[in-house]
Length: 129
Image (cartoon, rainbow, N blue to C red; front, side):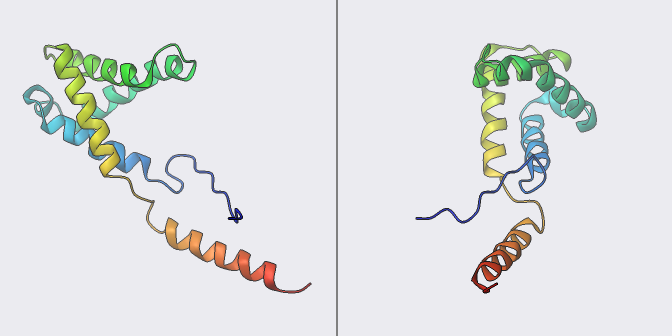
C-alpha cells in the first residue's frame, strides 16, 4: 500500500486532547469524596501543574510514563487533603487513562476538513498539467 498522506497533530488541532483530558479528570473527581468536594477548576489547575512538574522526567526517560501518572494522582490527592494511599493513586491513574482513551475524538470539523483536503489533493494529482 502506498502512503498517500501523513498527518501530524499538535494536541487540539485534529485530536481533542483537552476535551478528553477534562472528561478523564471529571471521572477521577467523581470517584473520590475529597475530590468531589474540590471545585473542578481548582482540581484542573493542580492536575496541570503536577503534569507539568513530571513531564520533563518522563520525556528524558528518567521516570516511566505509568509511574509518573500514578505520582500525579498521588500529589493531587495530597493537595486535596486526602490520604494518598498507593492503591488509590494507582486506581485514580487507571480511571483517568481508561476514561481518556474511551473519550478519544477528533476536534469538531477536523474529519470533514481532512476528507475535503485529501479529496482536493487527489484531484490535483489526477489533473494533467
